[in-house]
Length: 477
Image (cartoon, rainbow, N blue to C red; front, side):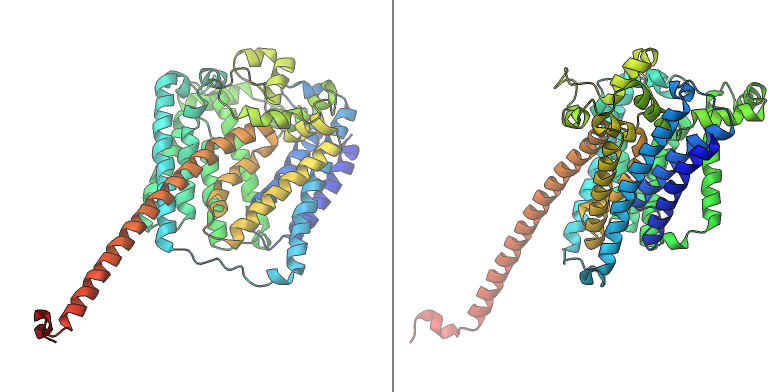
């Protein structure tokens, strides 16, 4: 069993290694690099882990046949080939291009205008997002939010409050936007303080760690970009530290599931309920966030007809961004439909299962064409954004890229509708604030220009009058 799985894991590792070597001069946290790494991690974690220990999970995919698991591995391999082909191909073409051998130069922008734009966008996102989220907390109540165990209840009470629920995301985007800009140090420190408060709220109170992950990855990405930290400088010690950090996250998730009373009570509960080391490892493999997208792809492979959607979920993604009050009959997302069919008890409580972008691709276009085409499309979009950010340091892409990083890390457990909704909820207020900043700055420039021209005319008239002989003013020729 392990041999057959390794026969598909080794090509996946080989393709990934060759791609990372080709782009070794890029930052290790560039979105396209993260997409490659996330694909190989999710494509290998469950198959190898489930071959070593018996996974303990409530998912149906853990009981499927070996043929289904190998077919799912093949889908991840095809998806990775599509992503790596674009990422490595763009890099090779850029190196061979004569125009790309020199450093990209930015056009001359008015520094004051750009700084004003960034301050308006970052400040508007933080203030507006905080107001929206405060209304969300008022409507939902602190009881469901502070409950560390019933996450389904949190999602249930949040139904129909999408605009308010996105408030904290807007705060995060505003903090990262300010950090990526050229604002003054005092202004950046103020936004960093807001980011720290958002982190504390996400981890210590509502126990929704993806907000803290978004901030952490965004700030680390900017540190790597500003310090020009390349992938070639990554040492094995860093990889080991990342592995230890991930195990710590999994241990925290295990501890959170047993959290009753104080932390000492939680540790006692973990020790009592998880005596066997093999059982503990089985829970880590079966219940990991890295396993759920793979298990969802297995279940779609077994219980759904590949290619039956024929692109319908991607077309419905345009309608999925509309709020329920505006379009109450909007079609369900593929994740909602999947939960209704296979996990109705979870769906009835307002919860669900982690979806899979690879599984959605095969559900739409088949087990080979779907993952390949979607992998190529995603990698092309990310490389285009990276090129725009590299060529123009003050562009919107360069400011927005730190927030994209965490979306790429979580991309495999999402769907086209969830990605479109998250992007739309963030891009729309950014566009409105950018228009407002442009209008205000243009008005200030016109006012300053009028004032300057008025002063110039007055100064010229006085200078002209002082040069005229006083006798000529009386009309003498």
